[in-house]
Amino acid sequence: MGKKYILDTSAIISGKDLPSDIETIIPESVLNEILDYEKYQILIGRSIVLKPSENFIKMAKKAASETGDIYKLSNVDIDVIALTLEYGGIAITDDYAIQNVLSYLSADFVGLNEKGIKERYTWIYRCKGCRRYFKEYHKSCPYCGSELKLVRKKI
Ligand SMILES: [Zn+2]
Image (cartoon, rainbow, N blue to C red; front, side, top):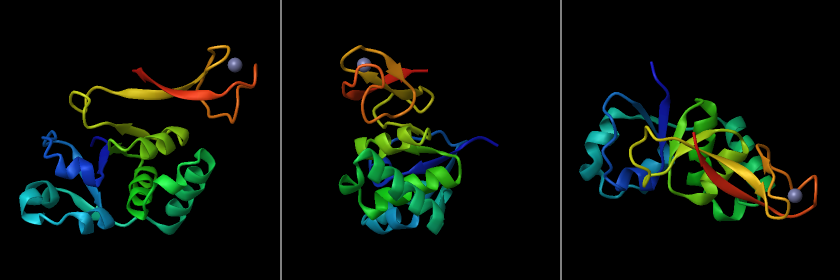
């Protein structure tokens, strides 16, 4: 069995065709945001609807505080992050704040505009000063003290 994919609201309403052989999870709170339920019933019907556990919600919120994304994220967004962690899955989302927190947690995600979910990217940090790359998040570069920025790297 392959990896599970966690869908956020934008992933559902994009109407993007997802391969039929992948397992998809929809957070219960995301489902509550979908007004036009019938339009997406095939995708919703084939997905597992789940609520994340409290400890994974805590973990997601803690990480979001650490990256500074907490104020950009709704409770629904937090659920997407929490379920991705809980099931070791891959989030399908275009939300940069969600992606940033997942990256910080070394969790997987793919954007909607990337060609198919087969193409995979990873995010790494790059120093704006000395241009060194870092896999882990630092508040500032350990070498030169400059700010780090998140850059996307194809894998
Ligand atoms: Zn540096």
